[in-house]
Image 1 (cartoon, helix red, strand yellow):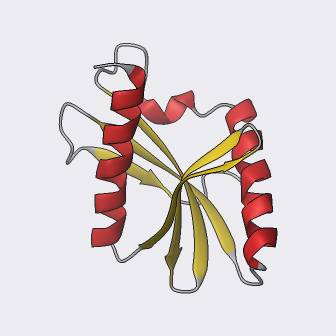
Image 2 (cartoon, rainbow, N blue to C red):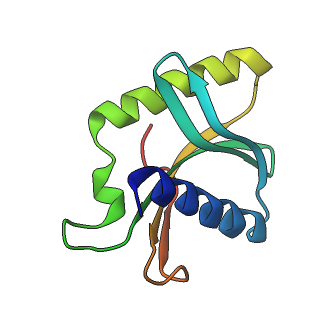
Length: 115
């Protein structure tokens, strides 16, 4: 399975997890210039930007460990664009959803992962 297919599968699983938890998926793969946000959700009047990381193996660490400072900066850049585009005036949050593709039930939802 190539990287794109792993990413797409991870995002599909993440969307399902979040919807079951009461999140409304507003956008998938929102792009701004060279930045991307995997999922943009709404829950309880809170706009949530979600970075999804999925791996088939923990040989090189856990998926959430792959969110580095550069990725955080890119997600925040795209989030700022989205916030202005829809004229959002309420609270926001940045989450990471880490998924173990060997067992989809094994995931970690890190709320307020970065700011």
